[in-house]
Length: 161
Image (tube, rainbow, N blue to C red):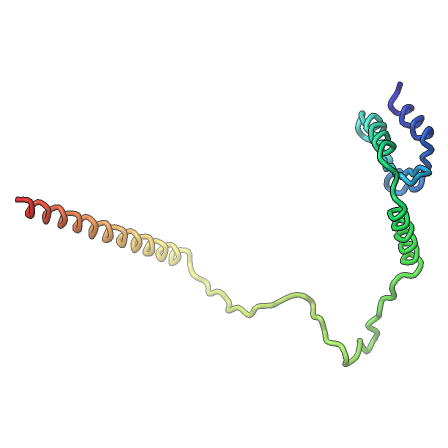
């Protein structure tokens, strides 16, 4: 049997009714179980997957009374919010008045001194001087280590004779 017709037959057999069709199809059965499917399935296995999801939804226990009551309250609240939107306070010509402080724009400006222009040749020369300084420091450090090792060797050789 074709998965699409199998899905439709199972949906009708378990009495799932269309509740919403905004972005997805939302079906609900008389016991309160909900099945959500895509409006425009793009996968060739989509209906096969819908059949398996429908079977899992039917096998699951129906929602408890507490869950159904919570869903009802949520719908009620959404409807209330939709019908009574929050009033936006306008600033008006005179603004909000003296009692409120400005919250600012959210931007933080740091006063920094302007960076002076340094020619590339000068930058290159400074970099080379730093490199030579590090190299000379490294060589001096190695020289001290070698001198210390030579001193230790000479002290051992004179002490053993």
